[in-house]
Length: 364
Ligand code: KG4
Ligand code: ZN
Image 1 (cartoon, rainbow, N blue to C red):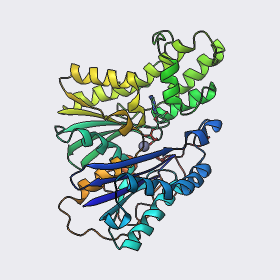
Image 2: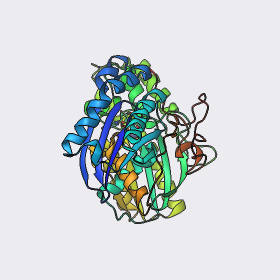
Image 3: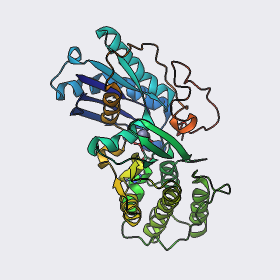
Image 4: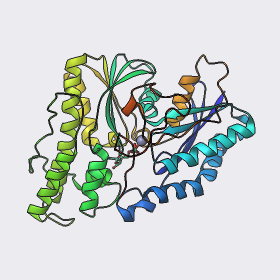
């Protein structure tokens, strides 16, 4: 069985082909970074237009690299949400067209669940129960995984996502987009203790995250020191900010470990590419006597292979999944806001826009 998956939830147009045995035959990702860089963040309208331009080519390329044609595909899968509505609709409509033409099943996949799946692609035997920290440009969430495909949300960000905070500070200093990798590069060799950032504390002792306070503190430092792209203390400043974001993330993970005594730890999402986060996460796992499972960097940022892998997992034991041409995109609702499974029927997953709700609307 061959599965073709499409991912267009934000600013990467991606397609991948995988077998039922989870062998990745191809994975193609086209980033839109250059399109959005002049604006310092993702411009939703430009993102959907760019997906429209690229989707046909990217799907064709994924098939070419897998030495297959659409007629060889048994199941189509597509990211249903959360994400930018215009971007999601491009992928969803394209996938529906393929499924309808070939009369083949179509599976809707949750983007956050797919990020978590990326850890299982390289390490299928992760011990349960596991804690998964998902850190991306649109989400920062902590999940408790009881077993395969069964998880519970423990905490999520109440304001900015960690990647969003990094992107915004980089934008403010005119350093480039996306901000996470730029900050990582420019902070190399900087002193992470030079600038003191107070870590956020939830008054209710919940496992939620918050990054707006750190961002405000960073903006204050920028004002006070007249920080700029060519300031002598820039590496120290960026190293201190990045380290404080990492500390804020790991403090919550440490508290969750104490509370839930998991058997292993998972780190995923675009920010999981960050070397400091990967190293400190590994260190926390070691100190807690737990295994740390962190996908390779190319599997951390948005890609369709993780969507295909999750579709393969969901297909296990299912004889004939539905054609599902009435799948809806859900821009805001997700595991991160509604809990696994809740409201996930056809159409029921659509939530009115408005309010932050963990949706990915990284506007400039
Ligand atoms: O998962 P992803 O590709 O897209 C979303 O689902 O949001 O994550 C993108 C985020 C951006 O905020 C970007 O700045 C961040 O991941 N990122 C990094 C690094 N590479 C990407 N953050 C810190 N260090 C990196 N090396
Ligand atoms: Zn993502």
